[in-house]
Image: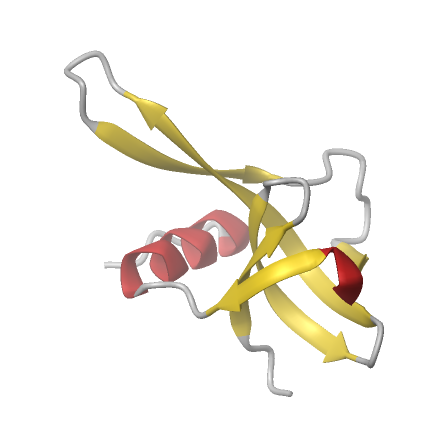
Length: 93
């Protein structure tokens, strides 16, 4: 798998976006997972935020057990662009 970016919905309700390093029968190995959150602005509009999922993760990689994943999808273009900007430090046009 060539560093595909995916969105996972976990059984805890969290939605995370990450690069996939590897997938086995039981485990996703993810690179720089970020949590997707939706907040309401003062004007009532909804804003999507991307924040680190595991604040104490030092090397950027983590494992997620597949039995904890209830849904998997590809991110839309805007979300993927935001993730890439957040994880690379480069603002994409």
